[in-house]
Image (cartoon, rainbow, N blue to C red):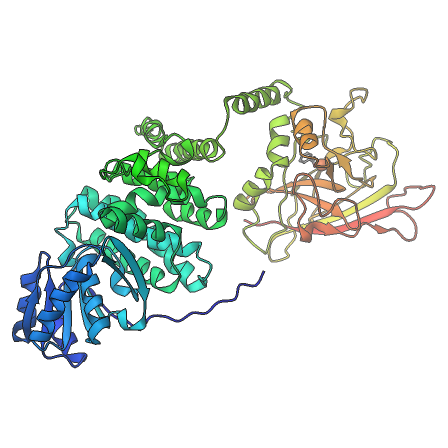
Length: 615
Ligand code: BEZ
Ligand code: FE
């Protein structure tokens, strides 16, 4: 469905960096201000006051959370008494809220210097409380004109405040992703914000004065705030405002408790948005991931911790969310196995071979993720183990069920794509399959490899060249294929010795020629675990008709490939995903006398092909 949208980026001027507090006087003058009311309850007020110098005509230090209107009235008196023409606010959400409340009442411009990650400095939204009720309004007059982000002002923010504040920012980005009025620009910014917070927050918690991590977190908080500005309010923000106003709860901590619970509640309604959140966070489940992040960083996870009684929440909807939030249950009830995964990965710390270490630890990570994200049951896992056991039991040197499993799951073709076919100059490769037998019988030019088996005679005339088209004399070419009923010799116990497989050596012009029979489509073996998998998933077992080639020559990479009969069945649904466009070739009708003195009763076919191999 086409997504229609309106995008109207906010006009706020943003100055970002380290030491940018020194720009504050210039930014005030830019806005035409000369008499500043400094709203500062926070640390660093003196730094800002010093940078403003005699531009400051008054100060107000009484900003309070949730912007109570009576506090705003006091500040307004100060502003008017001093005839201030600009508000500069330094601090968190409360000072920003007060600056906005003053601006919307008087029209004075605002310069905000955030010291937390609230994000409200870039939103046109103002929440105020009067008699315990929070009202929220939105207006372009509320939006601050200029925001100065100075990472230096955030370095000493304690971890216990940093975590809830950053989760508050995370909430802005998460809610933007499932907002009905988001757009591609908001989505991209929100995902970048989530990635930034997920990366930087643990780093800041581990080392609070890490300037780079602080800068990344502050940048992400700005992006998150700008998402909130662009969309209408979602369930989480509405609930937090309601709870905050009603119970005078700490703002950021309320976000921290509520966010994972609301995300879990939204999972059914907005699965795609939450899947993107999970990916950006690098976790299997978005809600549980946020819960774990908060818990691991020591943030609050329950309303109980914030001092609420369970019964005080009666009547607030959705009740299930409030109940879970009060108790602090991990969303979905999925246990957190991240410590277990970390422990298993750490057990490989001393692996001497770095490649082995990389492969095995990543395999463990993917397997754990697979189990968790699918909420795997013990029964399912035992079935999988039984399936693999049977795959091994049915296998021997002729029956290669594991190869077949890899083929039918497309893994062989993925590995083939990664290993071979990297040059457009060589003939594309294709999977080896389970029916190759080492050391096929050597045959001479013009021989018939069909051992007299029934089928439409096929004359194959091939050349082997390098990537410049120069012949490769002496190239060793192994050929194998099925009979007209789709069986390879190794599948036919009554056959005496190898049939429909041979080894040729290319002549001085790099050529080889032989008789065989036209291949047909055939089912891969269905009487084992792979057959059970295909049957259980309603997949057909057929391979498109083809002949296999393995071509080697000293100094060249060995080419393993197949040629497919143009017009054959199953070319676009080959059950092992082996077909490549360039390998589908004409097996045309032969004209005139059959080569090599052969006599045929009816018609015959011919295949002419030049293989290019690379060094
Ligand atoms: C084959 O073409 O021989 C083959 C390849 C993959 C799986 C089964 C058969
Ligand atoms: Fe085959």
